[in-house]
Image 1 (cartoon, one colour):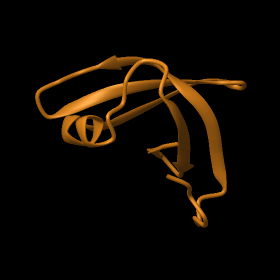
Image 2 (image 1 turned 60 degrees about the vertical axis):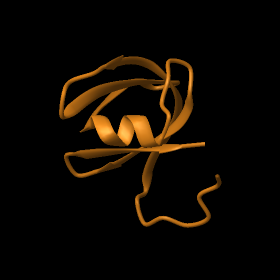
Image 3 (image 1 turned 90 degrees about the horizontal axis):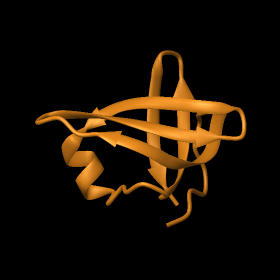
Image 4 (image 1 turned 45 degrees about the vertical axis):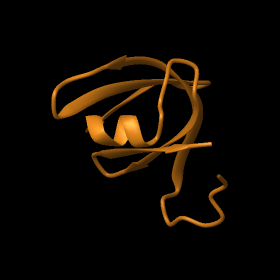
Length: 71
């Protein structure tokens, strides 16, 4: 999968460092060259993106929201 265009300017490439799974939402820590970025996303999204420790991702930061895109 490649992201060809997105309107979010703050993008941080990194690797998933830790996933704390919950029943409904999960916490995903992404290690970037600038430090750890944490996102709280649905556990369903973790499963659909097949996120695992070490997965290459992009953290997309807009205001107070952090989204994850798998590379």
